[in-house]
Amino acid sequence: MMTKPISGRYLSFAEGEEIGLLHAQHIGVRDIARRLGRSPSTISRELKRNAATRCGMLEYRASVAQWKSELVAKRPKPAKLVTNSQLRDYVQQHLEGTIHDAHGRVVDGPRQAPFIGRNKPHRGDRRWVHGWSPDQIANRLRVDFPEDPTMRISHEAIYQALYIQGRGALKRELVNYLRTGRALRTPRARSQAKAWAHVSDEVMIASRPAEAEDRAVPGHWEGDLIIGLNRSAIGTLVERSSRYTMLVHLPRETGYGLTPRTKNGPALAGYGAVTMANALKRTVTTLPAHLWQSLTWDRGKELSDHARFTVESGVKVYFADPHSPWQRGTNENTNGLLRQYFPKGTDLSRWSEQELKAVALAFNNRPRKTLGWKTPAEALNEHLKSVAQPAVATTD
Image (cartoon, rainbow, N blue to C red; front, side, top):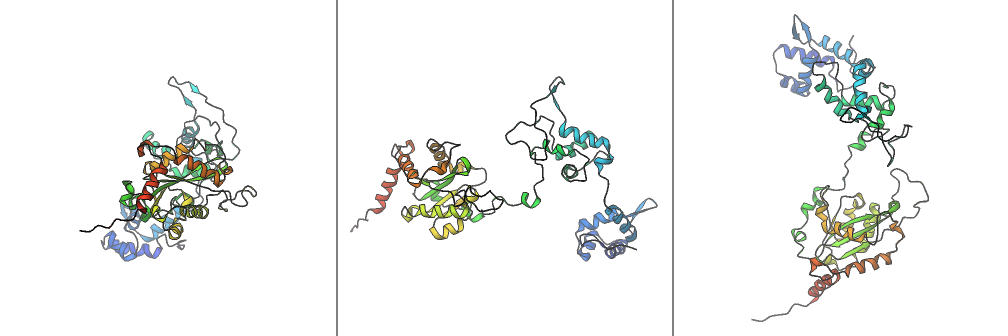
């Protein structure tokens, strides 16, 4: 008696009978797939994999196909790395094997702390090993053993042997020799999540007005964060034409440091999405509206609330392409100069808003070669005066 498939993913016995009848009538694979509502590759694979071998010829019969599929689906199966010692030794050797110099002498390298079920040592020495990835091992087997089908394994089977309890063909501590050194695998949903879900095509830098590119008209800004000790930060805004710089004060939120950090908990460091948008909105209001036409930002999630910021402030936000800091070169250069006042590794949350304004004032009164040795403050003032001048009427 045939058992019922566990899900609609698998072909049923009734579908198998239909395939057998249609195939005997010499109907093509694509036509069969269309009638059954299945993929042509599914039908083709079924005809090749589960066909009966009678008189040395492949002949598809539904009963034999069902028997074969149930036989293959039986669980649990013994893992390849358990039953094949040669394969297991090969995998293990290329994960943890010692390295040698050109003369074949063992090079010990640094000593690593004993494995205690956690991730690799943070900023600590790791043992020098071959350190092949499971993908490299799985594909190299075909090169080293081209004629031996028993020396085959998928990279996923190696990962499962390392991470899943009960498939302990490989020593658990071998996860330490993977490149990431993670004691636990990253969930698939997290690894496949979009890193920049807040960035759509409409807000990419390619959609930014052309006038922002040639710096002819003031009002187009670049922005980013400079990060300090203990997740402290200061927002930096630079006007592309005049190089005028504004610093955004990002104080800690209430409760920071009082309760332990929790995953997906409230952003209390001072530059969460809502806090960042509010701080930028306050900064925008200190200058005339015509000086805020657009803002080009890095792809950081601190500005993921950009849609609300645009609605409430009227400033269009654009994001640079991934790994393209030169698209915000003015801001990147400014951040480097600001490190004179805010060195790396120092706590930036200790500075008040008034102190940041004092630094910005000093910074905007430095003469710049690119401005003909005028200061950013002078360049911006010249623009404001030209805009404020009343137009002179002419008569013919």
